[in-house]
Image (tube, rainbow, N blue to C red):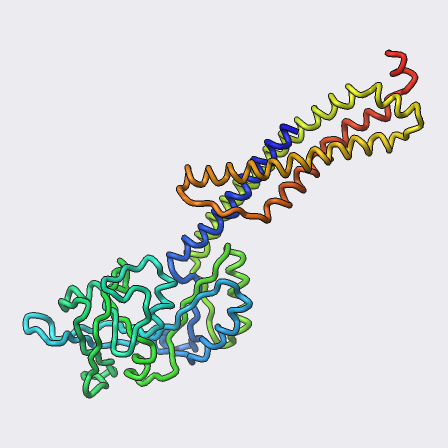
Length: 375
């Protein structure tokens, strides 16, 4: 019973740790941003930057999100624009040419939780007439939250296509350490109207939760659901996420298998000692007419009962051990994975039953006459 309890406790602790660490690691990898990109299919000879696709793709994604649990996404439109501070300062450049990004900014923030925003907007969506400016742009143009900029979309010629550039209030300053620091973000509809691209987007950034294989299955589902759209997994993120989770799973499974094998040998030795100790009882039962199968069944039932009791008690002990390990080693609060309870109990019962099979074969060799004579 003691060895089964220890084995069940260790197995429960490892499985609970793996289940919760897997969930937390998946959440942590979401901080790296989108792991799948939807882009318009590019015809041969066409410049990728010159292509856009219909915004209807977003509606298809919303309907398909029911089949892909945990899917989050944000539509994005990229255009080249000229940004000028208001009021202008003769000591500063008259304007900056940069990439303007039209998007659902709240959805995009959910894809990149590590982004830092200076300003009071928090996680709110951008309103009409508002924008978020990258940190580098804000430094060059001396912008701060609450300031204003004029934004005109470049039409490819010497002058912007907007005759009277509209003003946008700076709702926040974005700092990411990446290319976003050199961009300005607007509400998607505002930039579409400004650029004359109503109903068009450049791409959709998505985050699919799960391991590498789950993400690949999600990519296949999206490819079937969205014909004419190129589905590109971001391989660096997908492969890193899959590699880490595979390592953790391999470690948990290997340690659990090794410990259960050792516990199985201990249970086998214990049951062998029990059978040998009860040879006289076995002899009496067989002398009274009990068959070998009946006696062996009694021992197997006893072993399974011990496995059941050890599994339940071990699960409770293992859950407490996993919670304490998570607090001490990772400084996180562990959520109990109840799916491990039937698994641990079943493993404990099967282990006890398998470890009892070899010792109970001794029953067949017990001769009542010999045993009862004391020989």
